[in-house]
Image 1 (cartoon, rainbow, N blue to C red):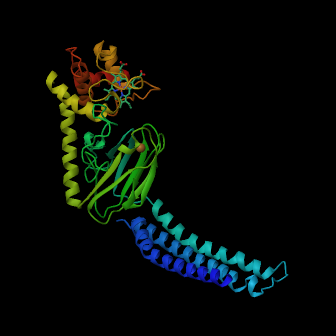
Image 2: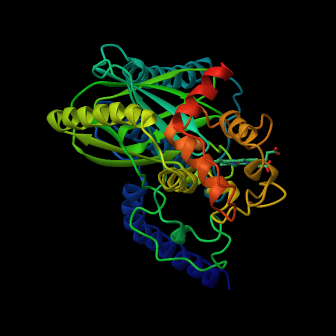
Image 3: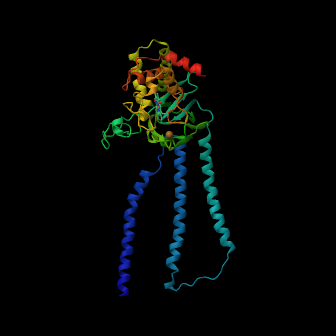
Length: 395
Ligand SMILES: [Cu+2]
């Protein structure tokens, strides 16, 4: 009887060992797949190397500790007649098992500190970009371009049909268009930076805490209202890189991706010059004459980008949280109050102040749109100039 059990146990053990070996290869390739990326900056490579060095130190410690443990369990088992020693203290052993871990920790702290110092050294940057988190989009401002500021918002550009009923209740639940390659990781206007250039980021937020995360740069920094956090990159390869906000920043937290385009210096300069010209043209636009049709067309784009998430495509809102704009006392009442709500928001509610977020043209457009579309037909309009005047009067 006993020998049979022993035999079965032996067989079991060897097949377990075989299975473990067979699992090792796929496990290793999986580890390579889910490991952190090496990235495209000196910091990301240093971070990756540090991470791997520390992993191997941990593996070595595990091998030694478990080796000694299993060796002792097997070699000195009771059935072999092992008799425990009877001593209770050994100063020598205690010194050894305190000083070895101490030395290992110091050995880990030195390279870690070196990498940390590198990560936080934001000095001597050639370009400063301010990054502001908004619910739910990022704003990028180029601070010391040619003296002329370039500021724009970077919005999620994944088509609504791919996202489904969360964005648009008129889409039947569970019916989605086929998802694109960069689903939820694509934007209308990416951040553009030059290759091989030290760029400093100044991160802050206009509402709640967000976090700007770009895995290929090994860069993740919180964007906190009222604070400015610094970070820097020097990307060594041109290309398109994708990341996300990694702070739970509200209902549409998953919908504020980050896309960075790294261009050759000359291409970047051309892009920036074009942006500066566009900014100058936008200032001119404010002063031009606007017709109702032009404002409504402008306003529709703004509404689709900034307002539909709460007030919905058809203006019906999602009562009671988000009021309908169709037939509302504000959108069909005196225009002064309508302007006031959109510029200054409703403090303490989800209705944000859009005065600083949108240009006068966009504000005039969206207000005119809300009064003359979405089932409303008040027939009046507000011009960009009037918006500017209202903003100046309010200050
Ligand atoms: Cu966020």
